Amino acid sequence: MKKQFLFFAGLFLLVNVANAQCTIDPRAQTSPGISPTADNLPCVVTNTPYNQVIQVQNLSGLGPGGAITVDSMQLSSVSGLPTGITWESNPLTLAGGQNGCLTFSGVTTSPTGQYTLGWIGTVWFTAPLLGKQMYTGDLTRFGGAPFKYYLQVINPSDPCIHAVSINDVSSDLNAAISVYPNPNNGVFEFKMDAAKRVNGEMVIIDMTGRILYTEKLDVAGIYNTSIDLSKFAKGLYTLQLRTADGFASKNISIQ
Image (cartoon, rainbow, N blue to C red; front, side, top):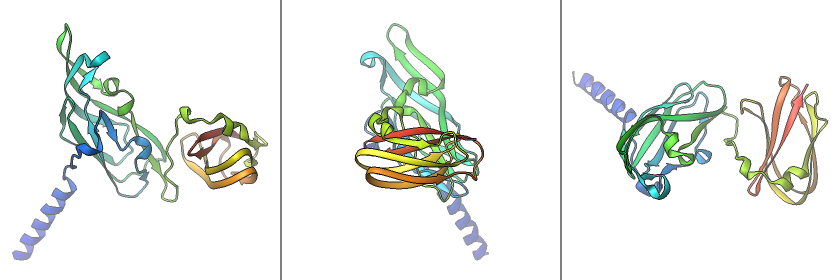
């Protein structure tokens, strides 16, 4: 009987630990938005347990000068998650300017790539002349850029490299690299002729965001290398050279 009691007590403890709410840390997010940002979030590795806490601060006002007061915001669902990944929030409803946290956890078998999330819920707000109002739907409409978020799914052997913004494009770096022949049969040359040292990583991805090839670079002047992607299907691919100063990108057509 004692053993049975200990067994159920242990089971109860495991269930409660698994369902434990995340801990809110207001120091991690001191302005409206999410921390860590999507491009600093650890990637989700296929067939591997994932557990990640993000910190959130709700908006306190909207519009010019914050004329519209956000009374509270309630999250009802998160769309776009990879299969097998679930979410839990603490608390479910945030007052204007209040801090909270979310946990993403689970194991996914979804294909690699970027999964853009949708925040679905309700916002209660007070607007000049209109008084108290309510909106239900996509909360990104209110949160804007700080609340745009994604999870990056990778294979166990892939490095965790996030999508980059077009605003980070380096025109000088882009002009310094070339791919030839292009189109090709999957075998081609990468050439770089840079005026200064380039320290970064070259990545080739397919149309789904799956990483097919990576190479660390720390070179100056002219650099050449041969790349063989002939084992992959015909189609369009993207080569990206990512550095601290920006990135360059070239499309590759395998025929």
